[in-house]
Image (cartoon, rainbow, N blue to C red; front, side):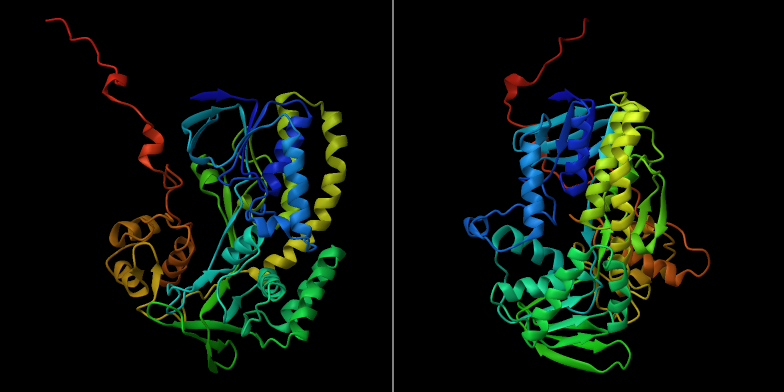
Length: 470
């Protein structure tokens, strides 16, 4: 099935939802595509269970998400929920699948608002059942108002660490410990940037107060170096980054996360220019002040183009949608300038907040100095730290060769969880100028099932050509 529009928007989170609404308000025929069952993305995720829907607890993210979903439902936008994009080609032609089967959507303009994925610093035992990402914790709490585990430890870095710990307390779970790579001075420096958004600063201060009043042990400047347990987590071992002193803590569940990285597979597949940027999650897509990428009529917004956070992403989405409408001819230059003036002003203020958050989440450069040879780096294919070094010794010089030598990145995650870590190992072993060692982007950018592409048919549906004349 093929459908055509003026504009396609991939991703219905804060950036994509706002981009679609802005473009539609200017008169464009817009299609919005998202893998989830409702708009909102990860941060403004819609509640899924009856318990979560009944909750009346004050939640600004829930309120923003509900508002976005209501505006989308009242708009002229054609929305494809629970639809997975697996390929995109210039022009633009987007291939996707859903329970209804395969379809191709076409448009002369495309906005990519693909969001971010979580990074976790590998450590011994991080694949043990009972170890989850911080992002997984937020997804479950927002969708179900619940959290797995009883004796939980929360570890990693960035504002999400504090948010998960505070929300866990609200659900009646008292974490046994909070383990934060950041120091007190790191947080004080970040507070300067947070001050630009007073409501968020107040929320963060309230979370910190809740944790202090609950008496939860808070270990600053520390990290998890081992998870113990065979078929289930039994305890974790943490280490102080300065002294090296270690401590074991009993736990049945660990939530750990070390920041975010852009989900930029489609950006790269379409050839959008990028640059290395550790503050933005590893790489960011180059764009101008109208959110236009290096590819004509390809616009990028939100964390998929470089991590900033939900609030800056929403404003970027508004600008991207208006920019697409202007380039399509639906707005004059004067109309465009008038409509982007206020969003640009807000974005300048919100980006300072995003910068502060990203500094706390910045992934450490020495990602494997503490990692044992037996530690798994690629979880899908069980490729260890030692396997990677052996492949480098055998001549692997980039991630594509490493994939060929070890199968790293050939599992369902397609290198999203292990790729940047493996690249850091390569760069550490190969002194000199650092190059982009990421895997070459290829379709399908997400695993898809063949039956979704093929659909239902019988032999009578197969066209049989006439026999060639003798």
